[in-house]
Length: 259
Image 1: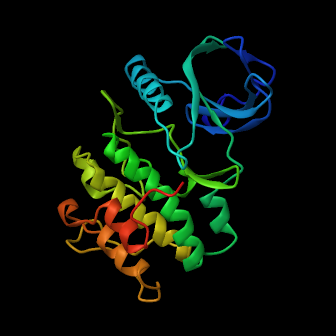
Image 2: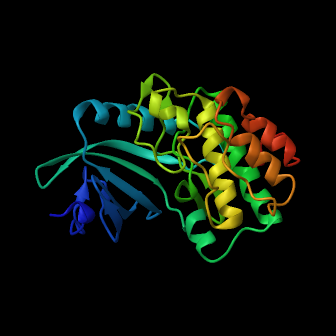
């Protein structure tokens, strides 16, 4: 089986006697997602991941930590555990079902200032809540900003640090803060990713940046205020010079979490 089709064809299986694998939603590498049902026939999503034992322990610990979190703009984690399918040892997490993602929305066009402010106010209120609880998200990008029940929410299935558990640092992706490649993980890394994501949402492109040069990413002057200044202050190469998530909320005119 090719890595791009991992988990495809498992429709009809039931995970741990509780969660039927219904429609396959897609997968790649070692991860696959399906529609499933909770008790009472509520639709949900189950994500199945094949990984080594150490990383599996980190996944389970973080998902159990996430189950205890409560914020209106953070996706809800219902259950997590281990299972075996076709002799593959897997970990799984069951979450509420998203109906779209920010990445899908911006494929149809850029976000205007009003909508960008509305979406990011809510998502950043959730991110601020995570930081207050000692969580570094580490995976902020348009695919992890979801619409569930038509409400913008930040995915809670992947964290770099949550509680006592830490995940291995991913490769240097286009949304990742430069210090991650040196193993430095702080809340400032999320700020960088927010800047990249906000910029892309409003321009459908990422800022021009030479990671080998000692310069900040170039932020187009056509980005309206206060978004241009916010993005600039998010994308400081020195993490100590970046703005905080709370500062961004204040600049957007919302210093408190939006219910």
